[in-house]
Image (cartoon, rainbow, N blue to C red; front, side, top):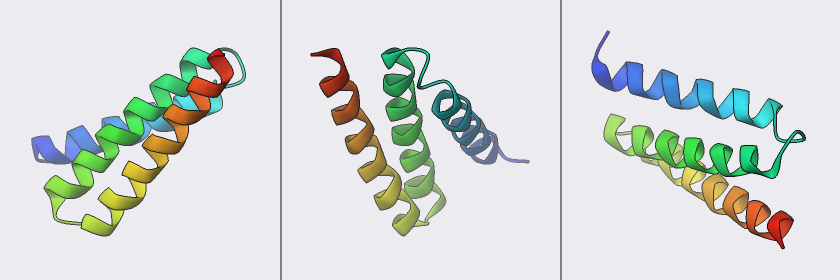
Length: 71
């Protein structure tokens, strides 16, 4: 198993856990946004650019949701 695969698996795991915990605190939304960005980076590095694009969009959407919930 390569380090890139481990990075991708960790990013997706954090993404799933933070998504499950979003209702507990708005900070989990921010963690979710960061995990989506990491997952996007994994997609680009792995050569699956469509996955990278979609995850980057999810990161932007989640960051915006966090911003709205904080104000």
